[in-house]
Image (cartoon, rainbow, N blue to C red; front, side, top):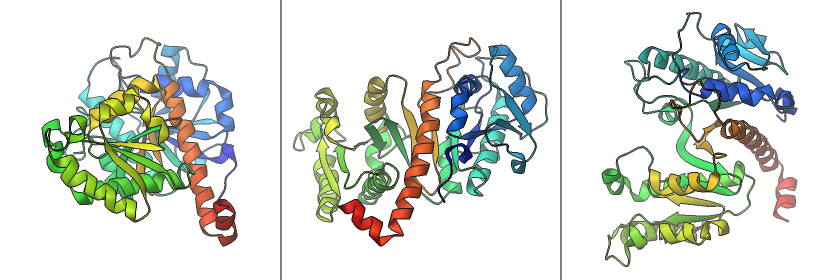
Length: 349
């Protein structure tokens, strides 16, 4: 169903309250024009958000609610997920606050799963203090992959620069052993589908970066590029997927070759994220592609070093909100076209 802009409900998990998450959330919605694009629901507690507002002298006008049925369109809603009183000490790692970050995230995910919010934007968490007997996941993505249908894939986005990962949060010395024909095929197909339905790109072009320096240099610096990546790429290309590579990663970004493609797939975390963050200038967004629901987040962490100082840049969080809304609209348009043969023909023309 196509919704009016202001009726798109954006669920927001508050993240680590000792980090910059709450600051960038409030800064984003201080601009009242944001409420013309969506209605935010912050999963936290109205008393703690009010206290944080005072700390940063924020002009954001919040509206406390106790149930999602009480959401007021055009307001900054704060859902009371807990009633406990919390003490904040910005810039410090607090195991107790990690539990509340997860309370917020789990409640927001449940609401997303049940369709009570349309999209989810997650503020940064501390991957260490969230661990407990009830939550044993490295981060947001792994939990979402369990709770929502699909195959989650980290997809970094900033305008036309889109970088996906074959492997994400694993040690570098384990990367090669994780790469299988099945995994590579699944990741490429996930990105291809996402580019089509989430970004409205017809017949997207995808580049795959080599695992080894110089993409193996013909087997001199590792054989995986020739024995594993090339055969999978060839097979998918012959089936109609416009995927190319593997390309040597250094020259690929150095000579702006990425501009010729709709997405780039890196073999491991830093291979993709170092050039992405260098090029995105703090405006990048982490999108979890491959799920049946939409989740985005800013491309930064808790930033304890500047937390509480009122100097955090909120651009990445704001872009995460906009991207979530754009993808929500793109998916609805894609579904409408897919269910209407005449519109499929119009789009092909």
